[in-house]
Length: 212
Image 1: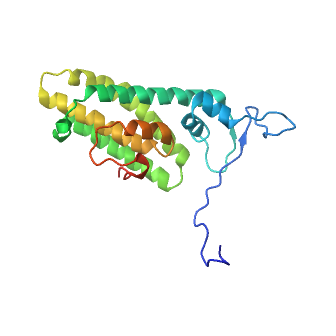
Image 2 (image 1 turned 90 degrees about the horizontal axis):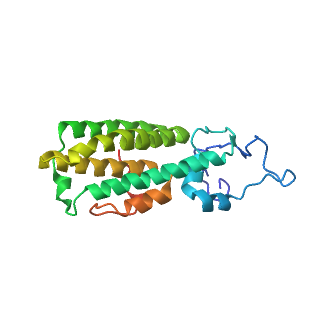
Image 3 (image 1 turned 180 degrees about the horizontal axis):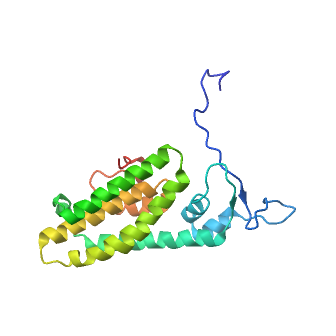
């Protein structure tokens, strides 16, 4: 590239480690310990496989293949579907609710997600992909699903339209931002769910603006 084009081919090179078998041995024909990634994808999905070989594996570090880890991220994918289904079932057909002001409680949740987003973005910019992926995973499962959605159920049933509409808008905004943050790591399921969200002037998720 330098000789023919007069350009530097790469300014940043991310050196990943080697994927080994469950015992830490190299995959090889002689050991007959190979795993066909297509079989794993057919069983658990490409997104689950991507997460399994990324989370917890820093640059240059080898990774022992763990099929149970892949299976675990398949469960996470199912959790994400259930989250999206709940949110979509909770919001009205009209998009007018998206203009509703947030209550103080719901604005606090949005602000907390903004802090998390900046934290994850900093990890991405500094090439700590394995940490960024783990952070959005924990936020979606333990904060969004376990806490925010559970606590929102009483708000969604409120007779006060201001509280109810604020909760609906909050859930949709948090789901939208969460999908954008997770997309680099689980692109297929996030793209599919995003296509179903009632958002105006929507593009493919892969070309949408990063939420910072």
